[in-house]
Image 1 (cartoon, helix red, strand yellow):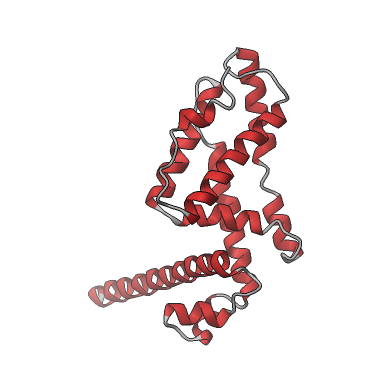
Image 2: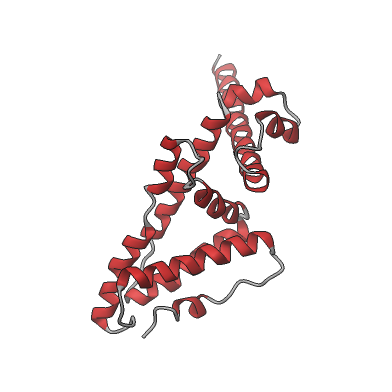
Amino acid sequence: MFNEYMLNEREAMTRKEQKEMRSKQILFKALELFITKGYAETKISDIAESLGISTGLLFHYYESKEKLYEALVVMGAEHSMNSERVEYDDPIDYFTNFINMLFTAAEKQPWVYQMFMLMLQARRPNTPEHIMKIALSVNKVDYAAEIIKKGQEKGSIKEGDPTALSFAFWCSIQGIMEIHLIAPEYPLPKAEWITDILRK
């Protein structure tokens, strides 16, 4: 009886793991297509066909294309919070450590590049309003501006409007991630080259 119970538990866990794996496959394939074709031009049947599954099975995981898009934007918003978990001693180190963490993650998981593009696209007017609000809730510029102020007080970050400096930093990161997605043959710059935008 006990052995039969344990076997059923293992089978249930396997089914659960398979379901989670399929859900991730759908998410990442949708992310790829939303980036390459655009949200409006991507049909739910395109995603199903590229995965070799039926549209009905896909709807079993996500009830609509909009729900699938929303799940991706929520995932992007959650991952963006990683920038607030970076440890540092001096404020300038925050930016260097964050870049190193980001580039390492992106090289291991190329979908990180795609997510940067998706989160930018999700801020555009043709995005469903409730999804756009999720994308707009990610405000890394203001968060980083507060760290820049601390760095200016310590003398490790140059003088200037903290918000403008933060904006320049994040525009650089966004541009690098987008260009590397399109042209991966270009090598990523060293973190220090980017933080020199801020360094005193």
